[in-house]
Amino acid sequence: MDETGHIGAGTGAGERPLDAALERLTRAVSRLEAAVERRQEADLSVSGLQQEVQRLGDDRSQLAATLDLSEARVGRLEDANREVSRRLVSAMESIRSVLETHGG
Image (cartoon, rainbow, N blue to C red; front, side):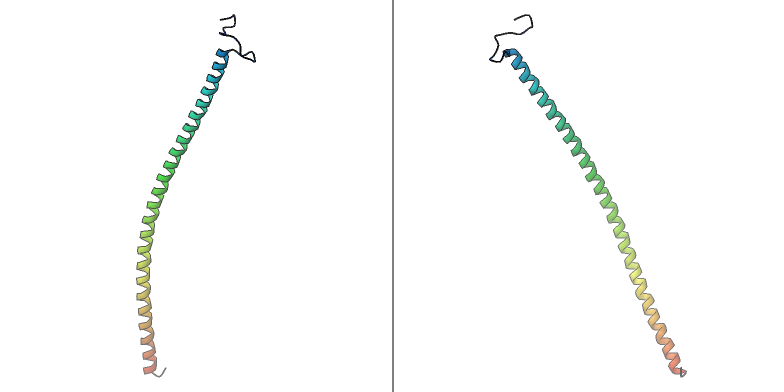
């Protein structure tokens, strides 16, 4: 070991084996940290997507219930419309009959 704390003879470019190993380790740790960060971001993204899917499912359920109520109301309105039409036809026939009877 020399005065700078390096061990061993230099490589061709003056770099010592321990320094080279330390540099490789530093790069590997940096890549690992970057991979961990990407994974954490992906996990957050997945979690956010799961929450969005849950919210959309809740919205869909609410919309389905609203649609069911609206369809029931449409059915009642159609029934009322048919009844009103039937009564109007009956009233027009009665009026026509009265007019014909009285020479109108």
